[in-house]
Length: 366
Image 1: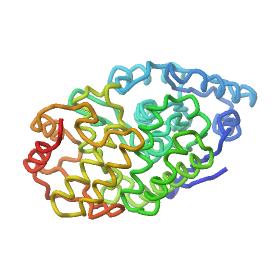
Image 2: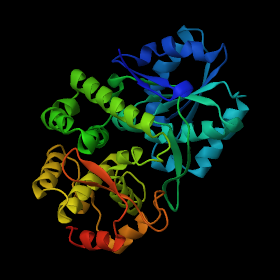
Image 3: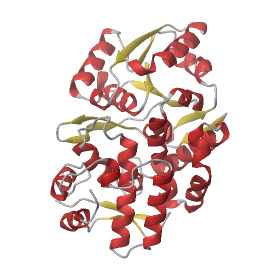
């Protein structure tokens, strides 16, 4: 087992990573139950993993109750938040209880936010079941729901008590979902780790094909990178944690245009967003054009979109920029962008003119 710690003083927590961990999850969860029934929130697609988890808990003498929601991004909504909160209250959840979020990023975000507000805050455990949630959303305490105004605009910082990651659960994921999750893996190389980007170039095919060693290495390296950044800037106040948003400003605009639907998965939006961020950086003379081309070529090689056309987005540039204006990072009318001076040399730029972004998007093939 590999264990990474998110160091946040008395709120520090472990991330345990090991193939075959889910059937033995009770080894880590039984002590958190305090002899009480544990609530598990999941979605319809995760039922097979739910059965494994409940069997593990039952064998350890821990009773559980499952709350099963519809799958998909639309579950991150006011209606589902209300439903989950009401059900947790019906189950008599106490502030010291631990709710289990079993699923991908949608479930983790929704459950984390519910736990941040039920009885002014109860505890929760993340058991992520997608590559994207394993390497990104399950770590760091960002929780939220979507609204008609945009993605993740209503939420809270609420750290989990523990994260349990079993790479074996990825065997049940469709190939498209695994590819989408990989976008958040390679992102760590693009941010500040050129050597890891090179590792990704060499090993992405094996990782996507299910190579166990490649999966464990990529997950452990990714969560260690995120844990380091979160520990340095938990609430995104000094600009360090903002680096994790590489590709997200462009990507969220594309997702919004796609209606936050399966038409464009989050990881696919992030991939296209990273390619756009590098191309815009090259256009501004910040990085070499060959860097932008190398990033785009890698994304194309593994089947991820590298721009608007590949993401299936043909909206006018003005429409995409309008989506960006609803970004939660807007401050005093200015939207910070993650740009790059090279691969592994990302920085936060607070001087970008949205009119210039629109002009850049006008040059992008539809």
